Length: 230
Image 1 (cartoon, helix red, strand yellow):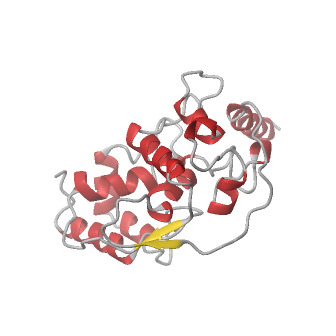
Image 2 (cartoon, rainbow, N blue to C red):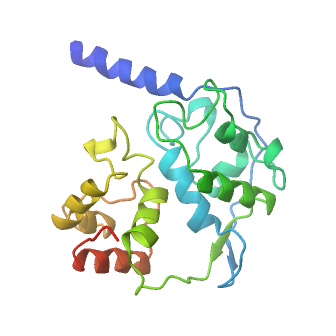
Image 3 (tube, rainbow, N blue to C red):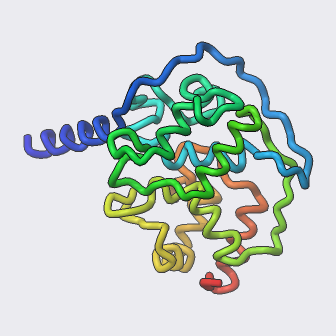
């Protein structure tokens, strides 16, 4: 009985932590494949730069995943993200952006107690909306021979993983904002097993797209080099 009550309390806390003023439903959106941005373009790549932020920080249990969908808001795909709270071309009229940058603890998202978005993440979402909030992919400019921790590995984890794996309530007890944790997972093989979706490992990122082959190669080369904090 105590376990049932505890589980219920956790669920209620998660649901109420994500409450804020209602989002306006913009109606149905057509499911269209993303437009490809040429290599070298300065435009925002939605699938690479924006979608992972929403999937890691917002579309998780207790908030805006398909199962919980607080306020009917699911933030796991382009069509779902654009459906409510986004006004293409106008960040100031986009509720999803406003709750990311507000100083009001009753409305800010992610809610207090969870890892906040970095200024760089807020800026990229703002730029994406200013550019029309388009569903864009990008021609890869990933270089597998560049694999420093600070330049490539940590930013990949920041956008794809730490939304769930951070703070005192980090999923699985793994705080990936800490280099020491990442180094341990790199050394024992769990990091590589998870990102390659190897048998016996929980595939990561969870409930979102697998990292590209080039990104996986960057992490593998960093691991093979001894996983330095460089």
